[in-house]
Every structure is written in C-alpha cells, then in structure tokens.
Length: 75
Image 1 (cartoon, rainbow, N blue to C red):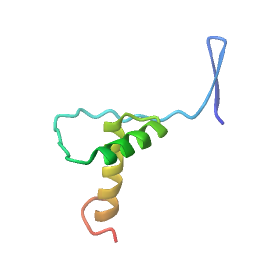
Image 2 (image 1 turned 30 degrees about the vertical axis):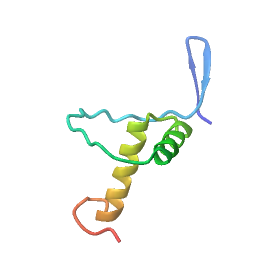
Image 3 (image 1 turned 60 degrees about the vertical axis):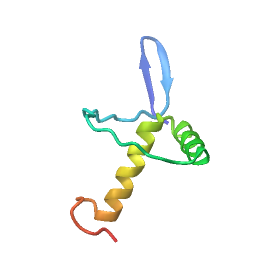
Image 4 (image 1 turned 90 degrees about the vertical axis):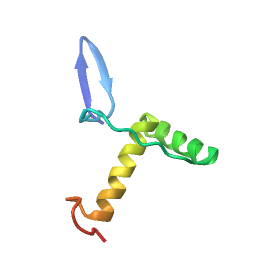
C-alpha cells in the first residue's frame, strides 16, 4: 500500500487521480427504488458519489460497446 508523510502525519491508502471536466449537460434516468438503492450501495462501496459512479460505469459500457476509441464496434 502506498505511503506518504505530510506534516509529520503518516497517510496510507490508495489515491485516485481525478480528471475534472466541466459538466454542462444533464441526463435524467427513471429507475426503480431497488435499482437506485443498489447503485447507491455500489457507489458507496467504491467511495464515489452516485453521479460519479454512474458516469464511470456508463463510460466504461459505452467504450466496451463501441471500442476504446468510441468510433467502432468493440465486440
């Protein structure tokens, strides 16, 4: 596990690199209460906000469908 020393404190853990891109578009999604609760639990387990977790999973699914470049069929 990576370790860092900052101001005399020892910090251990895995750090994620965040790529901040301005968000100017919105997507509304209808889902059941059970689906929302499932996604919320998964996001919490991954230490992400629900919005960030859903966006990450949708991006991965789209790239998988289209191929990594997002232009052609990935399957």
